[in-house]
Amino acid sequence: MIAGCLYGTFLFEETMSADFVQRRQQARFLVEILPEDKLAVAVGVLEAMVNIEPDAVSQAIANAPFDDEVESADERISVASSKAWLSDHPGQGTTHEQLMAEFGLFPGSLSR
Image (cartoon, rainbow, N blue to C red):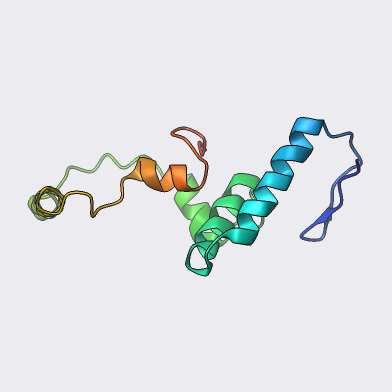
């Protein structure tokens, strides 16, 4: 099987394993059935995973130093408020793990 063209960048000819072809077909199928309201997020995740033309904001975030700033009182209050809301509304929030799983990802799969 020969790789084609992606966003105007020619991918060199290569032999792809049957497993790779099957996974690519599965990914295409999932994109085809993805609800419209989730498509933009999926495109963003895929672009981040293959590093296609990152915009200035994405580059700044990726290259930003670790945030070691002390949490302010207002931030602590906001976090406590969010946690209280989640406690009062069980099952109505979406965890990071649930969001990642929705796109077939797992913790650590989007490392820098």
